[in-house]
Length: 341
Length: 271
Image (cartoon, rainbow over all chains, first blue to last red; front, side):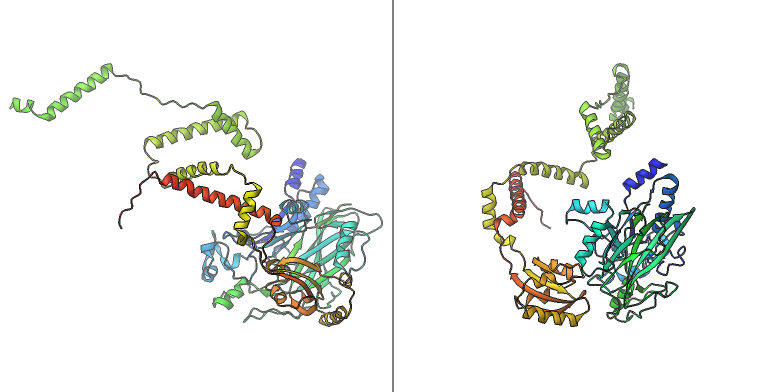
């Protein structure tokens, strides 16, 4: 069993978190307290909690505690997995042409056709334009990119081109005004996304968190830290809203006030005057427990935007049924940083 | 009546056939002729190396035996198919055979590497193939949403002669301050769709803006725009080499095809 877990850790450095056939971070049926769960999930069979990545990351910590090896030590990637030769065409509004050529090339097909063999789902309920993977590599070569994937210095987006930085370490500045300084400190005093953070006695780890919007996308709404840990035989998790746009503050229950950003259903325009271009912070876990193995990953949310279904309605006069999702929240997820005492 | 029957050719035929059958039965070889299949050592080595290529390890004895069985099965089916003329006018077989001749011809092409002179001559004759699009060299400073600060900074930069000031500008965005010889596509990839339009008609060597991109406001100083120039030989040598090979292959291919074609007289029926 240990050998098997070791093999998995060695040969499965990454997991695909987002693609055209849905998102695998969390499912609304099991994460009722996560207000952003239920994003572009696609389940042909009844969903199982264990098939979602946040669960696997927690379960991996349990395995590490019980058998000594974490078989699910995953960095994350996103992809398209379309079947029409258009890799990287993952924007909602970029003349969406579906992903199965003849089945959903035209809007009529996207509204009317059944998705693959699943008679229960239509195309419009099942698919999105896919995700992207980004890596922080030393150079734009095949070798450097694969090296970055191997060390999990990667993140996934739901199709947009958000930029995301994440470092964990000790002795960072309390705030960075210069991007270059921030990155320099991140590498010299800490580890980047996908890395392992160890205990420094008497100190609690700090995290440099920075995101910049897609230049052709909506502004950023917030960055969340998602922490998972294993203690006393229980799998735990908590979501922290660590960076908020429009000068908002979390209330005493950790809730975030609405900033009133909207999408115009007639034109597809989103609120340009809300949200941030850059969100950043240096964050310290207020509930840090030096004895509990944990992981931390980031989730960045954009302001609401029009989904491809709404663009179909606006451009082609197609009407989707009432239950079709017209407004979505594009996002990005970093690979975790693991705290291993 | 009897004579008439004796003269009937059908009777002759029947009698002769009975005779032949008897004769065959008596002197004919009972054993049917068998075709021979030899799995040569060479075949076995091929099977092994294919397996190693695919799986990275040698096949076990059991695996090798089943590879050999599979090989024999394929050989038998192949021969039966040939014996029944299944290759005749089959589209797949036609294409595959034609393709094999193409491969053999291509093998004869690829063996010549160009000399330095070949490449230089080729470059001289085909310079237009290597012309680049417009390229922009510029400095930019990002201000996120703060257009007021952008205006203030512009007047500071414009009135100062201290060129090192640019490098002291605080950069929150991670977008580089200096861009050197970038194409329109490269610029748009950083700043968003069509942003290079902003640069194309700009006064050189002075601070312009603030301009708005998806990232907010930018001040920009363009110091060089190069118009579709012909690059120098050394900087595009790899591209010249690739293009030369491509061109050479294309020419040789059509030359060889024409030689083959000369052996045939082709007629096309009127439609």
